[in-house]
Length: 388
Image (tube, rainbow, N blue to C red):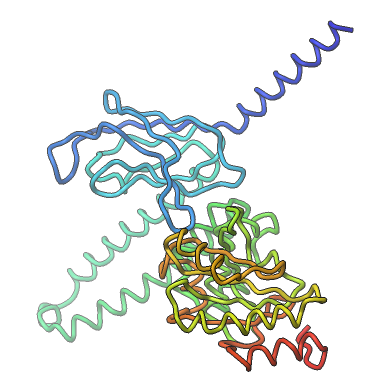
């Protein structure tokens, strides 16, 4: 019996080790030159970072030896956009995922020019960068050829020459757009195309076209990726109006746990943007408390108060001193002040600002305050107004 137990334990340890190896990433890189761009110092330490809630967060750090460096760790569940920093002229960008990621030799003075290969999504981005470089080179040659064949009388006339330049610009933009769309189509199952769409096609089309022709074409498994959510949020924000779906936002509750607005679907939500230092916000507290009382026996209404405070102590103190507590009154914040992501998505230029959402997450009304807000909530709770 003891031998069986030991065998099982050994097998579990082997399987655990195999699982960790499968999820492991190794990043190796070499610099052709390790001097900084704007100083005489050499690059001695590098950092692997990512953006989280709008802030740069360090994942790991390593010491550079003989112009070489190496990072190792466990990859995130979903491919993540990360950066290698420590230079004084930008950073190296890569997709963090399982496998051996190789940063091809590059000059530390110009890290943004580094190319990355080795894992599926980094290889896709590398191929895309090669396509982009070929396009740029082709355009350069064509421009030189056109310039050689234009008469001096036109080339010396700024207005006349501008017409040729504009025609070439629009023609090349159309060609490039077509090449990018073809590339996305051919790599539609790679999460890397989310990044390519966001930074190479997003500004070329209207939000409606982006959603219907691009986002809806992506496989279902890619629709939970943060890059997909980010683009969808931007599209919703550009079309924010009564009857339209609201962007999804997230923040940390008082206990530190993350909560998303989408977690509350199925309920009416009064999204309340406020701050502890805001006098008009404080004047709304009694009305929100009355709304809570009016919905006391209902389970289909919540208030989600999103604070744009940047100091946790002041945020918590205001909640406690004013007794802003109820089982259906939820407080969240990113503690980023006016830089909070939700501020941009909901076009918050002043507080208080409220957005009432129906159970499907669609906008019912904007900027309800005081008696008007209370009356609206009471009619919904009584069933005389329905937006389901």
